[in-house]
Image (cartoon, rainbow, N blue to C red; front, side, top):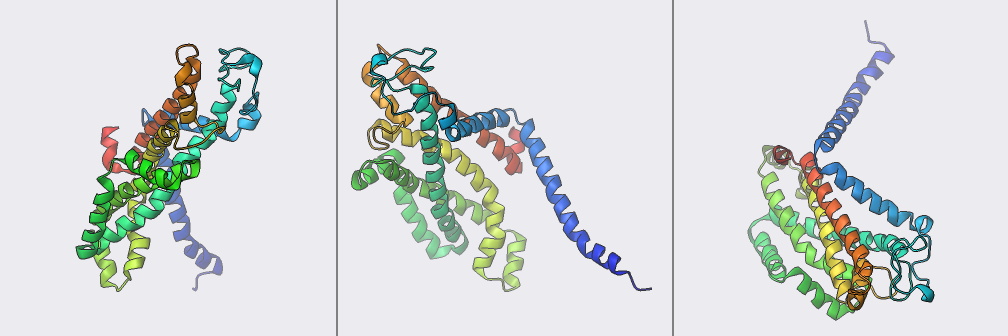
Length: 304
């Protein structure tokens, strides 16, 4: 007896349903592993709070971050100004909220640009090997020989101080980090038997890189990118502190710290709140990265 159409359709849909079920089980297992991490959830909570603070700043902030209240210059925290006011009478709480937007854009955008450039370079270097690998790695070594902040300062000196140029400078000096990391991961993956099988089947190198190598290194690249977001936020704040990043009147945390230097003894709250914001955001991202690495990298689970 021939199988009914319903049975034939059901038999064709079974593999798809099984694949979807397997993906759901994998996500549930990863989420369970993430929750079990002692540091992951606190880091995620801190990160989400800062994201929400930046997104909802116009709704949360009681004042504009640019309006001056000359009657309350360098006022300590009050019910009217929760974090006090700065040397121009601007509300520090509002500037912290709006500054979260700038810091998150600095960290995420610089890390994304660096990963978009560095990862393909590293994959090409690791997969091609021989002379191509040697040439690319020597160029990467030259860039890595410069201290990161010093290289960023040189780039900004050429381009000029601004928020955009600071992001580009930090992204450029982060490219070698992603490239070297992606190369190491690619060297490990390309030795796997299934890569040899793909070559034997006549699959093109580009397809092997895109379909088989990149998906297998994407997890560790994501964990590295999360770590670099926090480091890049700190670096951009350092550049703004030196006057090379965001320019006045933007409420960037590093620039706020720079403006508070001359009044540190008489109005310490001007430095306290932006410094605490930088500390908590970077700390939260580091904790989140630790938990993410435990979920994405099975070798790290035993160290959690």
